[in-house]
Image (cartoon, rainbow, N blue to C red; front, side, top):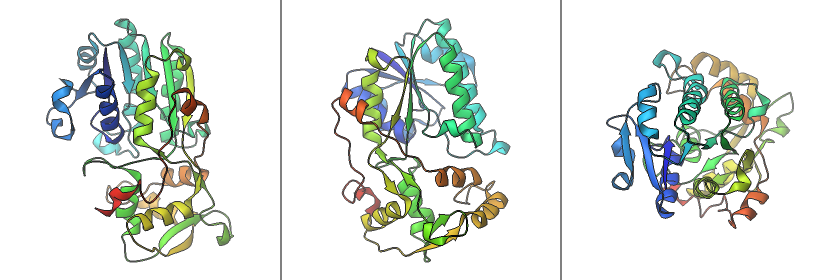
Length: 308
């Protein structure tokens, strides 16, 4: 069996490649020339060089594949560089769906995101458009909505939430902000997430390829739920720090983000703050049960990669 993985050089993509290989499935990857160094098992993958913006490259990559996993995603956009949610989350999916239909490839698995139905940010809108387009096509799709994904990024070129949070906020020599809406600072950090390990995400993706019970369905993926203030504490203690926190009104940070989010050095965007304050929780017991998976917990031991 051969599966085209779009987005194989990224953080979660590296785990999906491992799972495909472990299950004796050949990973086919569409990557830009020069990106081979990002792959941990390049010698066991079939590489097609090209770009998601080129139909001919997508068509070449899909030849002789049995299924497609679309895992391309960005957490912030830079329109001046041509890096947008619309292009990578929606138009890329649209192109792949149409070419898959042309080549009679029916199995299509999409990485979406938990919270897209809130439809309040450009990130959410682009993910939702992609879902709606895929659902309208006559394909055997499965859509996954993960909450916060964590795990060893296994390389500096793969952004991972906990590593970035440590670098951009927790390692700095001042208290970490915990945001609140309204006027009551006692409610700071009272928004929750359900962290899930990248290995669990990858295992579910790969197991679902041949599982008919997942066809034409959407699943949320998450683990145990934690409040933001507890996530900050767990991450800090994982790399042996006792980080002080300070309540900060989110509207103040949003104002600053609006001014500086176009610069890559600024750590957070207005939309990211909106989605963070919304919370991002879900229950995934059914799919864990379906695939007999015991989820990897979010704790000091599983975050030991932060000590490096």
